[in-house]
Length: 276
Image (cartoon, rainbow, N blue to C red; front, top):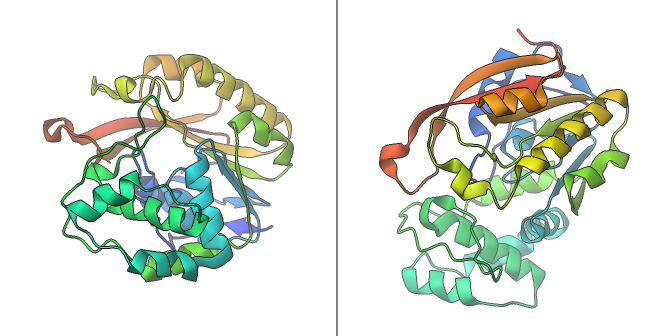
C-alpha cells in the first residue's frame, strides 16, 4: 500500500477553473477505507485533490496542457530557481502585460511567469486564443502572488511523481491493480444553465466524454479504482452509468466573469469505491 486518504494536508498553488479544493475538504466525509498502490490524475489541472493527499510514495500526473506540466517539472527539479525568478516580478498592470507578452528560452523563467500570471490574472482563468496565446486580462488583485511555503510544499509532493503531457488515453499503460485514478475532466455540458459549455466545448467534446467512459471500463478491468467528477446533467448520467456509486454534491462556483452567475452548483461524483 502506497497511499491512504486521510484529512487534507496540502493545498494547490494555482487558481484553476473547476478546481477540486472543495472536494478535497469533503473527501474524508465521502470515502471510507481508501487505500491505493499508485495515484493517477490524467487531468491534473491545478492539482487540488492531489496536493490535499500530501506527499505520496508513487503518483502519475498528466495533462494536455504542456505549459502546465512544465511548471510541475520545474518545481520538482528546482523549486528554488522558480521562486528566485518570481521574486523579481511585481504585481503591477504594466509588469503583468509585459510578462504576458514575454517569450523566454529559460523553462524556469517560463514556469515563474506561468504562476505569476495565474495569481495576478482576472479570476485565475487559463485561456488562450486561436493562436495559442494566453489572453486573460490583469486582475487588479491586492493579494500577495508569491507564496513560497506553498510552492515548497508542492515541490515536496511532486518528488515521487511521474509527469507527462498527453491525452488521457495515453495513460492506460501506467495503471495497474490496486491503483487509484482521479478523473476531473473539463466539463462539456452545462449544469444549471450557467453557460459552462461555451467555455469548454472546444477543450473536451461530447465524443471525449464517451472516450472517457471507455477509459473507465478499461481501468476497472485492470483492477483499478476510480473517482470521476462531472457536471450534474442527464447526459452525463447516461454516459457514465456503469452500476457504480453516483453521488450528487454541491459546490461553490468561484470562477467566472459574471458575478451574478456564481453561487452553489451541483456536480456528480462516480466511483467504484465504497462510500459512506
